[in-house]
Image 1 (cartoon, rainbow, N blue to C red):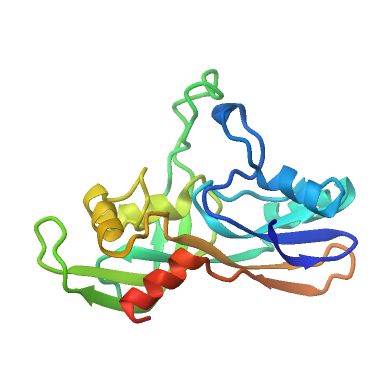
Image 2 (image 1 turned 90 degrees about the vertical axis):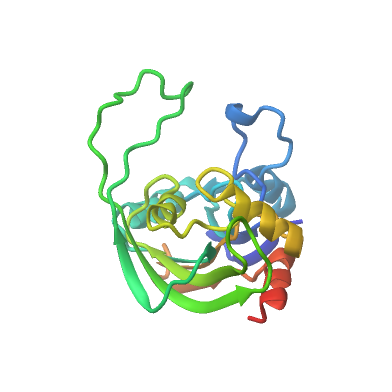
Amino acid sequence: MLEILYQDDYIVAVNKPAGMLVHRSWLDRHETQFVMQTLRDQIGQHVFPIHRLDRPTSGVLLFALNSEMANLLCQQFEEKNVQKRYLAVVRGYLSGEGEIDYPLKIQLDKIADKFAQTDKEPQSAVTNYRVLQNVEMPYAIGKYQTARYSLLELTPITGRKHQLRRHLKHIFHPILGDTQYGDLHQNRGLTAQTGVSRLMLHAKTLQFNHPVTNELMLIEAGLDEDWKRLFSVFGW
């Protein structure tokens, strides 16, 4: 059962679990569980995905209940009238607030995009961050005698593929548990010390205008047990 955060006659939002694909994909033919199909069976009607979250990311995921609502909501995303906020735990100390303005080259899939143009210019990409917590843990990882971590609130201004994960890697503060862009030694050390092995990236809030009432909607997703365990270990 998926946790439903909001539902009416037009839209439904769920708290997507980490490790679950949004919808069926030929890129992962062995997977059997998908948010879209699970939600459809759970509420007994078709759902239309409005946006995506990477498989290892948890948090707010929005669906429309008919194609007209889907078009209206997708338009808001395209016109950047939607605000998304994420939580991330990263390696090292950061302080205050900042902006990461670093263009990202389009990432192509070797199979799905094999005929796509490969020499396109990098696309503009901007992420704002705010530091919420820091901690230094008394265990050694790699060449360091202690481990330092920061909890960030991330606000993507643009929506590029893997933008948050790539931007944090760019400033040398990769997200913990990121097997693609992260620090392997840090990931292994975190798992050994805390038992947490997931990507520490969570879509905390989604703000948009309701497609029928025009009411400003703010939907928030709670944290899973891995996040709570890490907060407990770090004293956050």
